Amino acid sequence: MCKDCGCSITDSAGDSHTHKHSHGTSSEHQDAHQHLHDNPQLNDPKTISIITKILDKNDHEAEHNRVHFDSKNVLCINLMSSPGSGKTALLEHLSDFSDFRFGVVEGDLETSKDTDRLKAKGIEAHQIQTGSACHLDAFMVHKALHHMDLDAIDVCFVENVGNLVCPASYDVGSHLNIVLVSIPEGEDKIVKYPVMFRQADLVLITKVDLLPYFDYDIEKEKADARKLKPNVDILEVSTKDEESLKKVAKWIKFKMEMR
Amino acid sequence: MHEYSIVQSLLDSCEDHARKNNATKVSKVVVKIGIMSGVEPSLLQTAFDTFKEKTICEEAEFIINIQEVIIRCNSCQERSKIKNLDYSCPRCKSVDIEIIDGEDMFLMHLELE
Image (cartoon, rainbow over all chains, first blue to last red; front, side, top):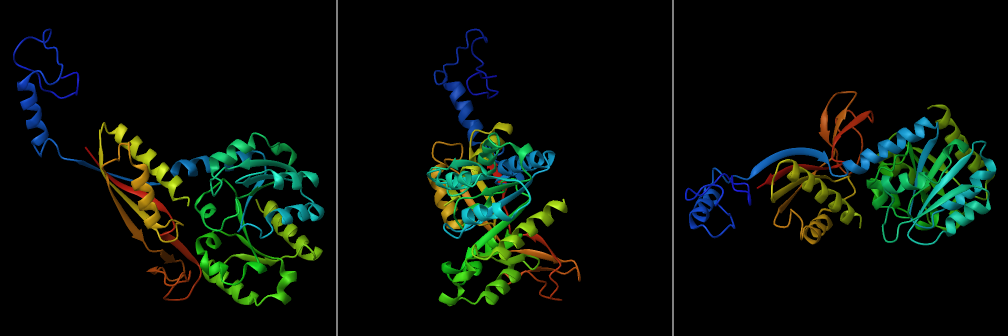
């Protein structure tokens, strides 16, 4: 066999010891080569059927994260929304009303401002700076988990990069997804970003104390969410309204108990 | 713009399969992209064309098949395509449905040389 290219052509002239195979010196070899490559039967492209998810490596890692959370009896919740809809504010306030211990894996392009805010409230938090990546993936979350003491918490929030598009495609290993949408963002966010809201187990409509100042048909938004995901839970939240925050804490507690 | 990281995963996967099959070149890549997978096909195409350079897929033709959302109704067992992103059975209106296809992205076939 030809050692250079692995083809089965050997020159008939000379024995194998003198067959130096500098590939190109023997015209007989080259002719045979040409024949080999021109012969459609020998040169048929091979079509292989695969059918794997394009993100299967991420999904595999996500499952690994989930198993890790399960082994520590920790519920993992992925928080997703556009920038500024109140993910960090929700977590800050939740610490006052929750009777479970929680930690936060924070995703932002730059800075550790959100982590600093949470730490100031005594919440265990680890910042992931994604640089330019528009979403967190399961590998980034895995790395962050090395910095989290899962034995000390009951719930681990993953506060995703503020973005209503990209994070929806990536399983990070969470058990549940909460998607926030705030009143000042305006109407129709749910129908405009359906992939994200399809992922939601709970939709939180935030900053509802601002409703009097905006033309915002909240019932229509809820109907849009339920058309997209009939069994989705929806809660209205305002950080000015303690009862609304207690309800969120109750929802999470319920989900913890049901696992 | 997560299409770039998706293409990176796709190219890695192509590379793996080509190596396993002792191929030196990938001449065709066929993917199935669900309309609710969160991927914009034209951006995926651009990302593929940009990143395939100097990989085993450099000369590969890239075929994107768009997949509508297909559901199966658990009440009347009807299999149907959903319209206007209304996740209910078009026949009996039940919302007790299972998603069969259209929310994921798959690598389907590779043509290797």
